[in-house]
Image 1 (cartoon, rainbow, N blue to C red):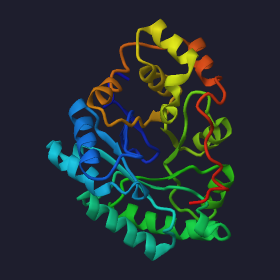
Image 2: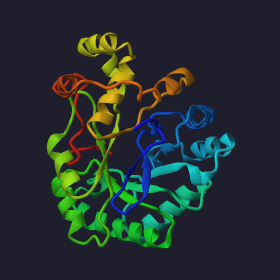
Image 3: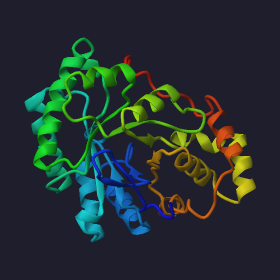
Image 4: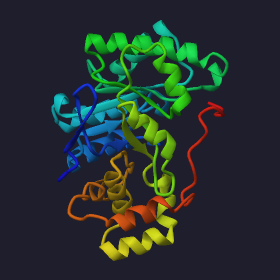
Length: 283
């Protein structure tokens, strides 16, 4: 890999840029629009949003203002937790495409496996939504489909009825939070691992060991964390609204961490907290 526009190849042959620009907690309106615009100007070609983020329309505006051809951008969104069921999912995806101002999404994900509203019938509801995803996939409106925050038992449940296997599992992967069992199982089922919150929602900047590594390599803490993510074979989704940091987070390809330092970062257990238990979420 030499740049953020280099690609991984998903199980269906679709190519996905190795670093994406995340938009979780990026305020709708000019903040989200300008952040996406700055990211595309800095060289990103992979933008990640979600219905639950409430900023799809502004993300779409940033893409249009950039002047970058739509076919050169990999665009991801996710199905919000209150929405499950076949027709409900078809309608919700169409609504996302309208807000984003596009005829297709490159990737669409089931955002959480067991939403609070479907605690008791999540398996059946996910199967219905996945059937809708499969239909939209075959129509070409979704170029790839996947899941987020799914653990092995959620994956097994989905695969009971799925005719198209998920191509991605987007989970929280950050220094000290490597979800080894989930990661290994997802990979065994042919999924690429996308890493959300790769900077531990900012907590990585307070970790002394990360500061020491930044000094050792002459890089920022963010660059160390993102390079680690790439060397672990993840696809990190860093987020920032500051153009200077957005650009800085693209400069990951002129250095390499030693295998020992990769292991050190992985073993900083709990340094940025841990991912939420998807079976016990309140949303």
